[in-house]
Length: 167
Length: 193
Image 1: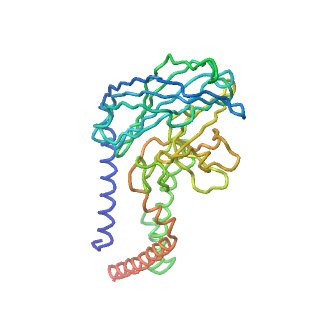
Image 2: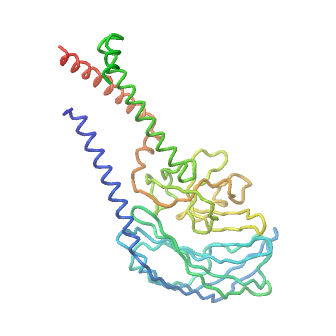
Image 3: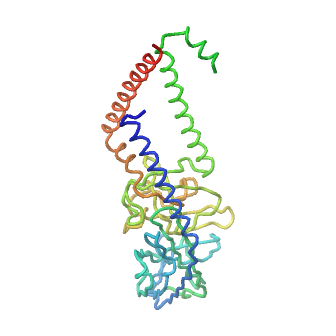
């Protein structure tokens, strides 16, 4: 019972158990954080708006995105993945979500930002329903921890509308 | 338990009992591991509730060797969810993020487009979906990632990518098992004298 093998096995088991417990407690500590994020998006320009040969509408926008996500960071946060999605309804689909831009915030210092960009990913509809369409711009974020449970939330900003005609 | 010992004694030599004990202990360990695994499958609702990240396409969030905990429930798939899906013809499930969702009005059928965080192209352009496949649907998605542990999956990756290590490990383990059994038998015979 006192061989190297038994001792190594016992040591390893205890070590792994304690490590798992520590990770669980670290993850639980994230629940005590109550974040107060804020965000604002402006559509500065509609660059172009066309219908493809396969019948799907596509539009290109220039956006101004500003947000303060510093309150989301805890000591157990590895990064925050943030993305902006356009959400709208069409006669065929009760919900469409199209991600226009995303970014990774590696640290609290970078969590208060302001960017001016055209959409990183193509805004293509499943069909030809975008003319004059009202849509919401929702800023989603996923807090990815160093270890444990991931949190996600969003801010919905409504009141945007696409132009009536192709251009 | 004394009557069992008495029944065992005449049944065989001193070597039969320790051997049988070891087999039963091994069997019990394997059974309890299987019970825990099956219970996890029931609780989380996925076929493989824990998987290891094998590709680097979700860095810097998930690195190769991290373990992901999955869960699947009736909640609709929404943009931003990290989903695990299988493509026909590919053995390893893929873990990527949903960037587009189109949900139909009446039957709630969904069309989903995914992309690895660090990839420039989405999975359709990048050739991750099968040829001719434009979207992912409900039946392709195995689960949603809800939590993770860093680094623990490295053992699985090493074992999968270098099968030689697997054989060496099994060989070493069997050797340890055989030599320890001899020691157990020797101890028993010493105490019985």
